Image 1 (cartoon, rainbow, N blue to C red):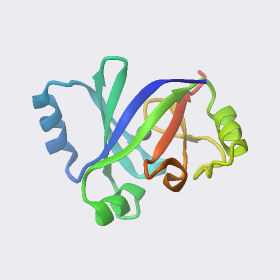
Image 2: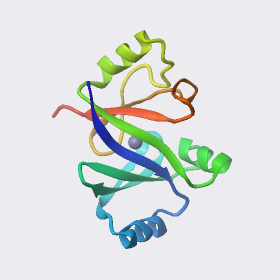
Image 3: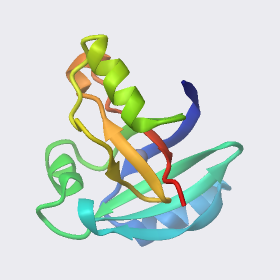
Length: 134
Ligand code: ZN
């Protein structure tokens, strides 16, 4: 089941500068976290029940570095909170959607995540995520 918008992911070139910008806008800063698997450092801001997730590459081979090279710093993805990522991968695949991730991987914020292919979702990169057990 899809429960809510969990977070909006925004690719940035300079994380510290972006953090200051979003603090100035008035969002509640939660903290930063490095996700080694995806070679990114993230910063989370709470907005009601949802979050803004700023993403900066920690290595030139990071998917975020490649995205910024192509598109510049901008909106990157929308994440939907679900009960069970594995179940959603199976359900969405069964509906004919192309998934980038065929099995859940570890994201920031103790989440399991999977991305859908933007070709299948009208040009929007959608992530499904759920809290990792334990
Ligand atoms: Zn995300």
